[in-house]
Length: 207
Ligand SMILES: Cc1cc2nc3c(=O)[nH]c(=O)nc-3n(C[C@H](O)[C@H](O)[C@H](O)COP(=O)(O)O)c2cc1C
View 1 (cartoon, rainbow, N blue to C red):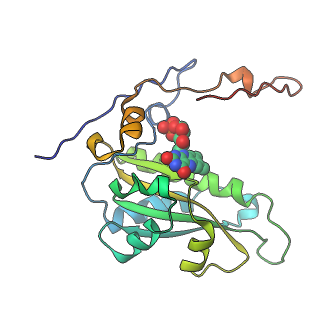
View 2: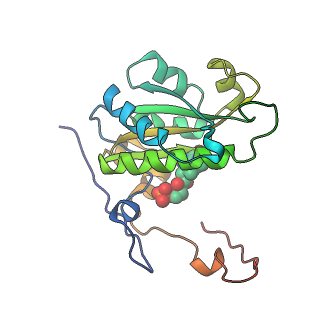
């Protein structure tokens, strides 16, 4: 029988926030329950309605469902580390953004910001559906750019793994399994990044 472990992560809040923010985390194990085309379209619809500078909507997505050639092509563009776990997911996608404005070659300085907002909407929608999201910077960018025919005015930014929460931690390499099952989550304190006054450099590295 399939082994399913649900990890109850602890999020130490200083102030109460929405449950969907508190309960979100980025697993590397996922349920074997498939994600359907219609569910992917729902996630994309949530992203579609994100705000963006001048409504340019610079985000572009390449997606594939497990068991299809598209999924395999995306998987082959991940880096070695992410390939060690991302095959547990049911959907993979690649995020790119248009680097320039709509009607000129001028740089759209806010494009990466807007892709982040797009993903924020996607994560919220996914969480409400019981679908976990794990974003990845570890992508072979040049390979992905070529594989999916992106022209030079686009930049491949990240990849994303999706799957229903709950999975088998034994499917992970030992070090990742340990991290996956660690319950306490960590964040910087608010006074390290938000100032009701001048900026103060309080950089600290969280392990
Ligand atoms: C833009 C971005 C890139 C990331 N890249 C990777 C990655 O390549 N591999 C990975 O395992 N996790 C990656 N992560 C996941 C982060 O490590 C994770 O979000 C962070 O540790 C906070 O944990 P939480 O999402 O569970 O709260 C990435 C997250 C973001 C937002």
